[in-house]
Image (cartoon, rainbow, N blue to C red):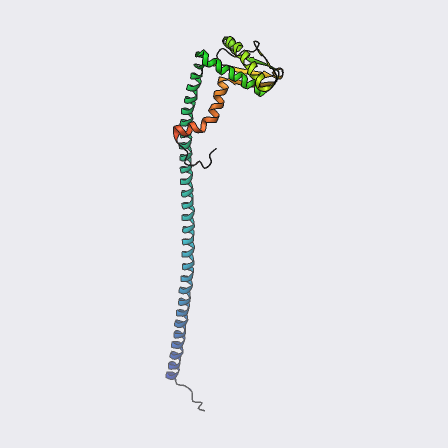
Length: 229
């Protein structure tokens, strides 16, 4: 092996080679670091973009649901208000119909013959409901003459049908109001059991029973109705 010392020129050459090697290594390392940094930046950027997109989607979905809910509430409120107005208008029409019927009920007593038959039937019906041997009848004072005539007939018809007699008296202590349209109130058991057969009460019963038919006749059948009596 040669132990010959390097000359100055040789030393310079070797140093230059060493410096060049170090520079090359540094450049490659810097490129590796830059590539890795770029990759990490791209990954973080993608994560951030996905996160922002998810946030935007979430906000959009929430606002869309809120808008849809608000729209449904508004539609429901409008529908309910419209329905209430329609129902109120229909009820007003029905009230007018029944009010007119109530006014016409006062005309029934104008025909004394027909009214007499009606009074007799109302008293007889009350007597059969009570099924007692002694009952009282309350009526308008101006109807007393017709009531007295009707009582004698009712007593005969009742005895034939029931098999025992009934004593019917006018309850003059409790007459019907002069403003009543007519009819009678039949009482038994000392006034503890009452059968109200006034024209007003019969009209109320008729109104309740015939209300569905009247409503259908005026407004037509409801498209949502599924059951019928």
